[in-house]
Amino acid sequence: MTEFSVPTRTHGLTRTALPLDGLAARITDRFPEVEATEAYGELTLHVAPEHLVEVLTFCRDDEELDMALLSDLSGVHWPAGDHIIERQASTTGWPEYRVSREQGMIEVLYILRSLTRNHWFRVSVATPDDAPQLPSVTEVFTTANFHEREVFDFFGVEFAGHPDLTRILMPDDCIGHPHRKDYPLGGVDIPYKNDKFIPPPDERDIREVID
Image (cartoon, rainbow, N blue to C red):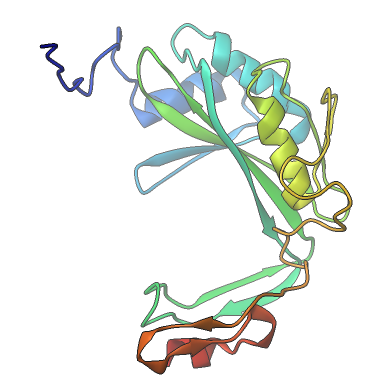
């Protein structure tokens, strides 16, 4: 009978992970224009669109960083205007959140990981939401192909140089990009046990959901 063992956390690793400050210094020393922030034990590098390809190439090829894997690429829409999200005491527990922006932005996040050291960080790039465009990184990471198509499909970001920038999940004849916050809401009634009822999003009052 074949015996199986559970791999350890260090299985397959050949070198030790760099600390977050070491990762940040390695990149900001090479690219002084990159801003590094650390929160909740995670490192984020804020990069301008014109430097994106060069920074990701350096992260991949640098011997100390060795970020061989683009493990994820996703987007977030931050629309312009004043936004107040009330405290969600009985659902998520999130506190009140207030933000104001003159220019709406699409933030695209690239999650890079080293397969030999197992350290990771995210690269954040922002583009205006009225004409979102970024350079494609498919020449740096092949896996970016489908990731960029998904961000294009859901957020409308045009990735210049992508070999086949077409929708990947929504129908080809779909109008708009459904993960943008200016996309019209819609949905169906949702019944729950104990006679609780949640109306579709376009008819929903957040107080009604919480209560």
